[in-house]
Each structure stands twice: as C-alpha cells, then as structure tokens.
Image (spheres, rainbow, N blue to C red):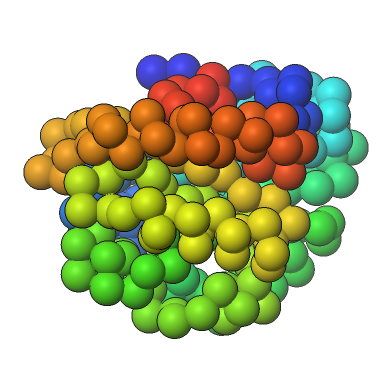
Length: 228
C-alpha cells in the first residue's frame, strides 16, 4: 500500500493516503475502500505520522485523503497536519467530505487557518442511479446545490446500468459548475457492482479531450494518483 505521492502534472501537489475511523455512512454499494479504516487510534496516528513525515511542501499544496471523510481522521492526525502546514509553509489543503458533513466544512478552514479545497464524491447527478443503485446517501437534486458548498467533484463512469446520457449530463455539469473535477473510471472490486467495458471504451474515446483539460483529472486506474 503506497500512501505518499507527488502529482507533477495537473494541479501539482503532494498527496497522502491516511487511515481514519470508519466512514460515517459506509454503505455505498460500489465501495470496498472503507476496509482501510480502523478503530485502533494509537496505531492509526502512528501510521499517519510516518506518512506525513514524507511531506516536503515543495508545491505548497497538500491533499489528504482517507477511506471516508476528513472529519473521520483522528484528532491527533489533524494536529500533525497542522504542524506540517506551518513547518512546510503549505498554503492550501485539499480534503474530501461526504455530503452529510456539508454543514461542518468551515470547521476545517478555521482549524487550519489556510484555504481548504473540498472535494465530494457525487459519482453522478442522476438521482435515482446515485441513490437506488450506488446508495450514496446524498439527497441533492441539482448540481447547483453541491457547487454552493464544494469546490470540486468526483464522478464515476463505466458502471453497469449507467447510460451515455447520464455521463454526458454529469460531464456537462462538472464543467459548468465546478472549478475542478476528477473522473474515476470504475474498476471491478469485491462489491457486486460491475464495470461496463463497452461504456468505458465509449467514454475514453468520446471524452479523450478531458485528458488535456487542465481542470479535470481522469483516473483510469484507482492508483493513478500514486497512492492506494
């Protein structure tokens, strides 16, 4: 498991994969990522400290991800990140949060005292597919609702049952309402959700231009950020 990487192309930054307490929702049908979480706080803090010790601050931007939301990171780990921010002169943090924490986003901004860019995994703006198939537990209906709170979204493409029109609408909303976006091409895992190979091929051809878009990162493999 690689937990530290440096992104040198789009949106240059350092990125760390940290361990946290269980995801507050933890019922998304496509996700087995939550198996990385834990309850042994002392061990998680120790592991996270080792990972954070590799941060150099070379780009002034640090992205910290975990198997859930940033609000589930141990308090001691948040304090370690704050020390790194000060020591390495980091001027922007990137965190990910579930929709259920949308009323708490300013807490992290106040805690760290620097700009925080929030990502959210919407997966799709198609309400029925998101809630009835993916079970995201995120009750927004329109992209504008998300854009009012979050800076960046993560979409997921290539799932059985998803349609080309869904993907077209999602990409259009991403480009219209958000400064930045990440598109995750679904890879089969231990869950029952399956990848639609034909849909993936169509997407990679139809939206090849996203690979050159400076505001969009396309992850064909889950480890394309260098962590995982």
